[in-house]
Amino acid sequence: MPFAFGGCVLDLETRELRRGGTLVHLPPQVYRLLEVLIERRPRVVTKNELDELLWPKSYVARSSLGRVVTELRDALGDDANEPQIVRTVHAVGYAFCADVVHVGAAATTAARGALVWDQKIIEIGEGEHTLGRGLDCQIRIDASGVSRNHARIAVTAAATTIVDLGSKNGTWVNGERTSDVTPLNDGDEIVLGTAVLTLRSGGRDGTTQTVFRR
Image (tube, rainbow, N blue to C red; front, top):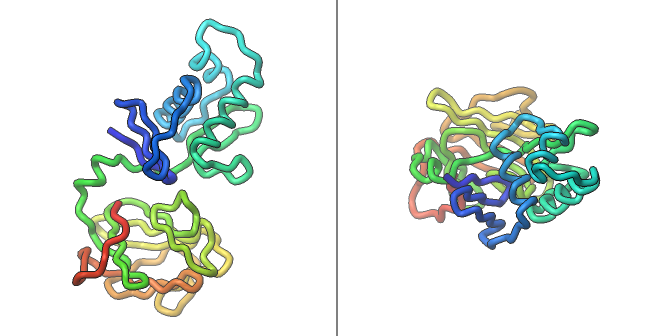
């Protein structure tokens, strides 16, 4: 089953990585590194483990692993200074830190609600949805005053909640700035920077275009 994360989709059966819908070629060691990290997430995989998995029964210089990690980050569009997918644990190893969605499961999961923003509907199903300007966000809100990773909405069968992720301008619900996990109800107004979103329970409303479905 394919994995979706940070604007990428990895299909372990076909051994293909797509970024923004475009097929990305990965050398064997780079692909193997991604495969190992995503399968063992969120555990830190040590450098010694990775050496043995990427170059079995062979001796390679320690710098070889660093070059492979750099190639992987370049392929994924990740930033070593602000990692959103591959996290470095200094002197120990690396870990996969992005949120992952199983693409097949997502396609069959009915939306439990929607966010209405700028005459568009963004459907949301069960799970966690990060909102912000970052390419790794499940719901991209590219508007002035919105942080890269601004807030997170969690949807369960029992409730929908939102929490601010340390954004510069804060997360506001019905005119009040949130400081903790805040319950959301149908019709609540959420403000992130200059973006004003309205929560609607039950999915689509009218003929407004759907721009995202998880």
